[in-house]
Image 1: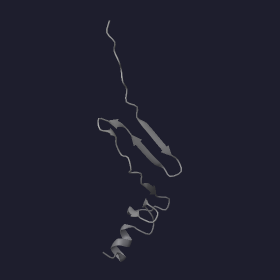
Image 2: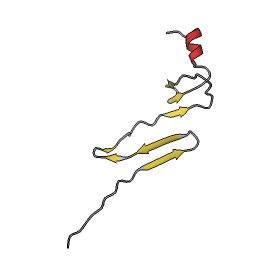
Image 3: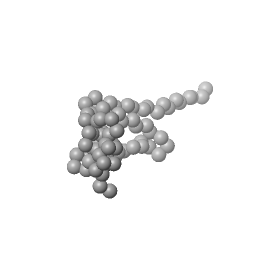
Image 4: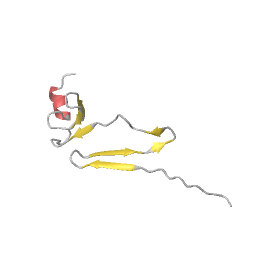
Length: 78
């Protein structure tokens, strides 16, 4: 009689309701991927045409009313 072994990869989805961050990790041939890339998105002040940017002091990606397509075109300083 022969033995049959079944191995199943388990995937996890973690949802943090306060910041609306979804982290998905799956183990592949090279092991877990995505380690060290946990950036939060702050979007409570988003408006039409908000432009996403990274704010180093808070360590977050942001969408807000102060950085929009209009502020870049009409007063942007490149």
